[in-house]
Length: 231
Length: 263
Image 1: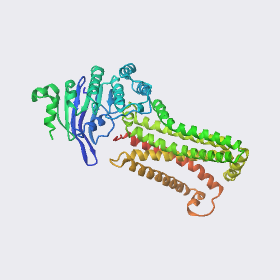
Image 2 (image 1 turned 90 degrees about the vertical axis):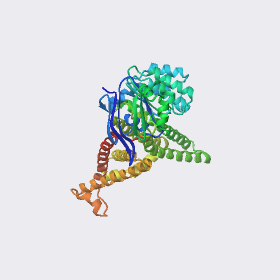
Image 3 (image 1 turned 45 degrees about the vertical axis):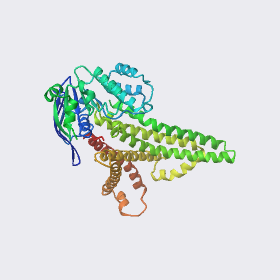
Image 4 (image 1 turned 120 degrees about the vertical axis):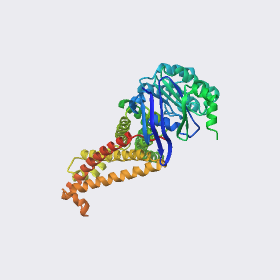
């Protein structure tokens, strides 16, 4: 059974069609790159999968079931923005995750945060935006989820932090689960991708196995992307 | 899961309201102390200033009990924090019920703190006598005891406040279904829902008036109403607002379960 299946998915904002007839499915144990320029519908698609938007039409199935409590139990989602209550300390946020997510590994989170040299009794509001984002990444990756959805995890961070983020993702995602990474910084994540989904103007324009695309096009995914999205 | 949601909603709202509660009680104590040692012109002035501050704090509690909950409702369900709220493995109805339960609790606690503040700052035999003399004619009007009248007023105030609060929630939910100007639409829808509930309440009284001549006098005469009519209106007020509150609760849960569109 597919982990995630989107069928004939459309999303309109008034008369504006943001996503047009999206069809794709994802199976277990893959790292999938959701690739496209800014404003092409990547985040909208991710928000639809996470119940943050209502589709205009079409279906989204997670393990064969519609989006709901059960789908949220198996999806670990990292949004593109800082979404935690900033008046909380890191310790309180960890307790929050322990309370709501049965698959949250508190020891793993504490250990990863320790590696960041972070005072877990410090309030989020006193941390830099970059540090808040790292805390979020640690929390998301400390769940034993079936599907991790990471929206622009590399956006606006320095190369050293990008490496930290990619290492954290690679070393911590649950065995047998899948990861969707949305980004336009393809060169940085190319090495870890199993599959790619190219999205442009709300439509999927290319989808397939990353190695197959490389050999077919005789170019890296980054080069294929640059060719396809040339202005 | 509902109990966990309630726990965190209480923490969120308490962070703000506790500040006003503490300030109100502190200023009430100060007012009391200054009035007790009122032995000079300066102390008298300070006592009056503290008294004014206490009244301002009471007004602050009233306003912030509503405003802060609307702000928190919006921030946790439609702003950045909503990315966490809506991805929690809990039913949407539980998320809304948690907000409502905490809102009811906050209103009750705010009313209690206001009474405590008034008691600390102004309790004296003379003031109680003044209050009694003011309320006794109303109690006689209702053919009831003074305590009962006060409780009816408090109950009416609380159900009305809950209806206002929930109208605001409906406004926020409907406003955020729009694509643009969500805050403006939230305010407009909130006001419209509140006006609609008031018209609905009046409509219900009118319908009941068709079966009760005394009640119908509310609409067709300018004569002074008799005691029975005023008593019936008092109880009806609580009953109708309660019905509106429950009705609005079901509508909001339904709207909320249809899904959200987060920016």
